[in-house]
Image (cartoon, rainbow, N blue to C red; front, side):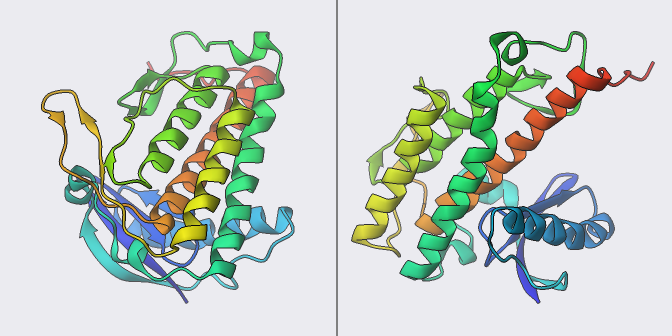
Length: 247
């Protein structure tokens, strides 16, 4: 049975698999989440098997911890599962999962510019990202994913750390840099808790957050996988047409 940490937000819930960094499921209610998590386990297992690795054995699950997600986000704090000891074999396996997620995303970087920069006009996403209320181009998706990789890996330091909207290099350079930083941290201490200070638009440098390798791994894998799926969605729209908007 797979344990999940449940993060509660106003009108939304996120369930993070404790033992499978990057496996996450969201839903508006607990009833819908209960139906959705087994499918997420199956999807994650299929994704890993497509890359030659074993995934979760079954779809049984339970809640290991239930938290106020907004409070944890505001404090940039670790969940209890993020603080669990991490062995070297686990880290090496999860680092491969980082590369799987990155490789899925990097395939988009090879598309022609006419596809990378195609913008579906007049389409607003159903649940808007506060940074992207309209549907992104594929190039925009890639840039956003790389900026968040910088943000996540910068959490693995004490003191001043980069914010979200940093300039990024090429997709190949940034993803390789992310893996190198993760491996470098693992060489020194697999269980260290870092306390980065992020810039704050209103108050200068914010209070220190709380990051571990486990936290960085779950955030990188889940985020890159989500945006690789978003790229697939854009390519489907190119082939089949943009979904009709409700009147």
